[in-house]
Image 1: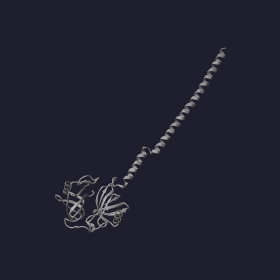
Image 2: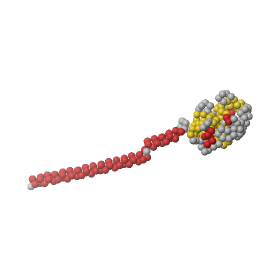
Image 3: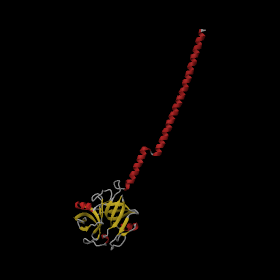
Length: 265
């Protein structure tokens, strides 16, 4: 009986061990299955995130595209910023809607025109050289004249010409002599007396002129305002700047300044 009891005990223990081994094997399989499933889910999530990032360009990709776009936008500007100011010199054709103006120091500045650009001629772009008033011209007339070269004052804002006014004196029109002369002059402004100034060109030749309450005075940092824009100035500001010396472009009609534009720096 004792042997039989021991044998049953051994068989029961063996059966218990086998059952435990089987359960352990099943749990291991389930655990492996769960790990595999979890790993697959993580990979799927990672793939989806990667695809989402690719679609959006990613944080780095977005910044790079933004940078490239910004760089491309500023490519047509001087030093990353479109130019603003007044230039006096020879206007030459570059391409449809694009020109250059070269001043007396041979500094060349490119600019664009638009449908709002005010183009005025005095015999070469269009109009009559003997007329006292400038004549409105078309883009085609400007293009034709600029292919030969024409002297003009170009007022530029953000890279685009606001106005292109042909130099009246260069066309042979108007009265160029004395204090009653008419035309456009570029040079250093000097103060003579209240309401009376002189302008000296690069050769030192001086021309006297007067101002009036109708004179349009525009500054770009020296007379008034700053270099980033064209600012209307007062007679007092003009006088103060003239006493120190400032480069300007002056349009004169019968000895009186119509406009005084500070020249680009």
